[in-house]
Amino acid sequence: MPTELWGSPTVEDVARVAGVSKSTVSRALLGRDRVSEATQQKVRAAAARLGYVPNVLAAELANHTSSTVGLLLRDASNPAYGLMFTRLHEEARAAGLRILSSTIRPGPEDRAAEEISTLHWMMGLKVSGLIVATGGVASEELRPFHAQIPIIRAGRPEPTGQVHAVSYDERLAARALTDHVLVHGHRQVAVLTPPEEISYPEHVRATSMTEFLRAHGAAVTVIPVDRLERGLTRTVQLVGDRDVSAVMCPSDIRQLEVIRVLDDAGFSVPEDASVTGCDGIMPGLDVTGLTSYRIGVEVLAERVIANLSRLLEAGGWSAGIEPRRALDARDTSGAQDIRSLDAPEKVHELIPGALIPGRTVAAPLSR
Image (cartoon, rainbow, N blue to C red; front, side):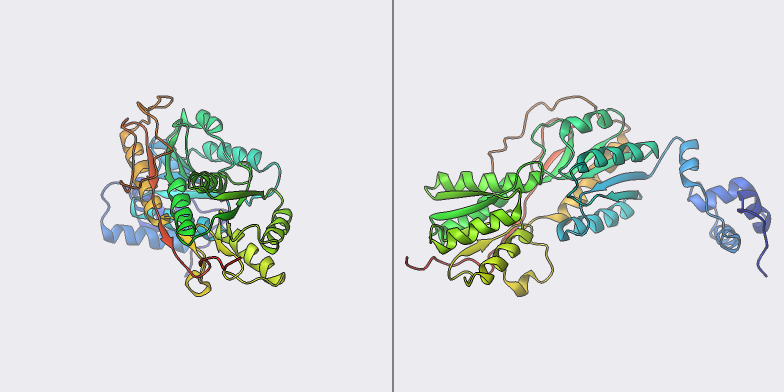
């Protein structure tokens, strides 16, 4: 028969039903100290019977320790961020950490302010560390948080060296895609380019593509995509006038939009224009045959949690200390899989990916 209680059950209630002390209940439910398996089962059964849930935050504060870290994610509906969300949780669980996460869908003008407010909220919950997986928060905005707890930026390039970061090697991705387009003979290329405030990683990809294309003598038309519809209209016009033979997009979602509007206008890909994207995470990519670059989400998640665990175990993160040397953002050789700064107190790693050739790039037809 269930035990009837008025109000919320307490640790005293669980101790009475289980026939143990309050401290044993706390240790058994929070996994601290040595409690026999038989006692743990008895305590859990009593807690389940009463509907008791321990106050983990209060217990961790009392013990001056926390295994909970905060995660601010840009948009979990995006396949790349959705996979990052899943893998970070898996890696954290394996490392004995819990993740408290919040995601903010891009779009609103006040998104950056909302993200900062969310970081303050997480700090108020006394998380032991923060993972920032959004490009909407600038490095200088993270420094006040970095002075209090370890923070690792995940995914977005971090050129300043002001905060810990494990980032995708966006310039390496841009170079691989550019080389693929050039080797197919394209010399007139359009590059869809969003501003930094819309997507900093996409902006880095696009501007790097333009740089590498021009370095090889290609004629580049930069198409601003602050308003995607205007950019798409300009893309169709360029393809129709045969001013470009290839369109490079900084994400697979933008690539699909370009292919869709070209198809609606009566153009074929890659016959009338080759099109590339980036991310390589979208389900069905092998079926659609999109040419893309697969970012290393799995390695990035593993390195983020490994570095954060190390910083938490060390009990410090050298807040405000600048690294002894800055990462050369122009180095895209990919000779090392992961490149780190010399300063042991500062995490700054670049994660490479892999080109997906696909079927949306071919040699241009004679014009």
